[in-house]
Length: 309
Image 1: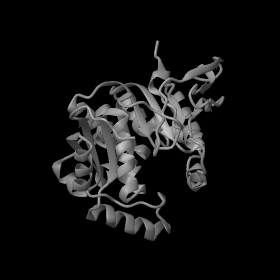
Image 2: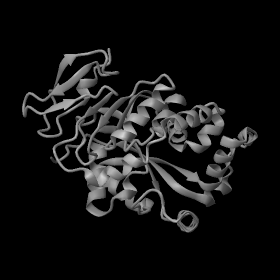
Image 3: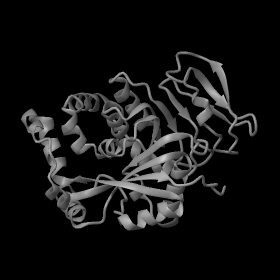
Image 4: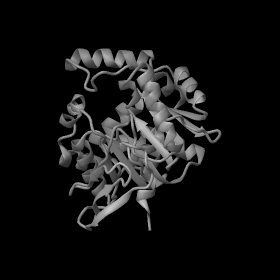
């Protein structure tokens, strides 16, 4: 039996000994109506849609923007059903997190995706055989409800948690793998470093996908904004790879691999979504790297590290 409560800790008092409350098999994969912290008496309810709410007390209204992004569930489900019917080799060109995991021989029992959105990265890792159980974290209830519906359409029951990525409700090294795609570029300076530190605290292996500050990204963003009128991802600052390597090194993590998303593969994949014959282009020549805009960095813990509270 998968003992999910052993992964959790109270975000209010950091207690790692939490309790179930009131068994109810209607409550999706969790099977309970809430969990309780015996130490500080905080309670964390589980919604009927299957979301465990572990947000600490506070005002999170500045994140309401994201609730408006994840609204069209059925269209998204149909999109992913078609997308994941493609040949594995073709998919690995686009879903570079899964590609990198296979290159590193990273096959794990469970993973947690931070800032999951539609959970497409977790879905790719699951469908391409990298992970067996997936956990999803987002601050947007709308995003989590959508992600659950997308996952359920593939027969997957995710452990979905509404939480603050500044204060994750997980024990140290709870997971074999954590991942984030399109998250850290929305923060800068000390806040960004603190978020990465919190991410490293909860898992043994870390995957991070971020836009890289290069000519491809900046030109794409310029022309997209010019044509569409605005950039759809809100406040976003592309990163420098070497800066991230330094951050991870300071956290006793070892960078063990890189992979790149590129504009040409993205265009081919979008074309394949409309015209299936583009799936024959299941290769990625070296020249494509010249058009890279996102980088995936894979990290592994070098030593046991005691994180300062």
